[in-house]
Image 1 (cartoon, rainbow, N blue to C red):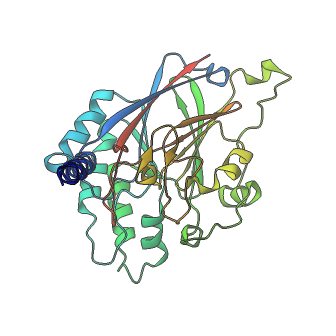
Image 2 (image 1 turned 180 degrees about the horizontal axis):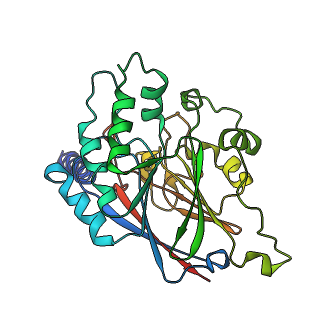
Length: 304
């Protein structure tokens, strides 16, 4: 009897610890820092910092998201990139929380925004959402946010030429238990052109003063196609880190119902290319995170 009581007490304590950790993680965020050194960044006059935000889903950290905004300011970024799903795309769900936060970011530095499936849903089904996406987009554009809706923007950042590419796949590519046939050719059809192709392994001189290409693509399920397309740095989100993460293995499940995704919330090197998948800043529907703290990603770029 005593053994059973001890086991029951241990189970209760373990369950309480798990629930406490889930609550803590859902209500806190961390800053995850990565460094990328590349010979294709030879134009940079100094180390350059990019912040990547994704999947806020109307989450609030401090009154008016002041804690998150202060963290952004403290990082002193040169560029802010947003990977989509900052709001929740459900009928009669206000987007004011996301709007009020994002429209403050251009006061920090230049901001580029690519849509996720939640913004995409509001955009594709405009009548159902009563034009909410158009209002959201117009308000942010007035604040200085640049939307990349299957567009490429060439900029100069601290002496380095960058192509910032925003890929927006149709909402149908996010269906549950389904993976669409997406390849590099289809991505080219959406974006209109390939990035600069000068990463010849046999000609080191071709890497000098080249244009570094960043692809913002919300859904990492099609990462093989993104890599084939040819971007130097690919930034994705969507998976919320796989909800529950197993140390040493990664996320467990994707929103589309697939288990143990290859890319779920980490930085991965694929030859000369870099993949970063954000664990996101918020959650929706299933407000569960375990060993999977929400994150603001800070990326330092430097020449090799």
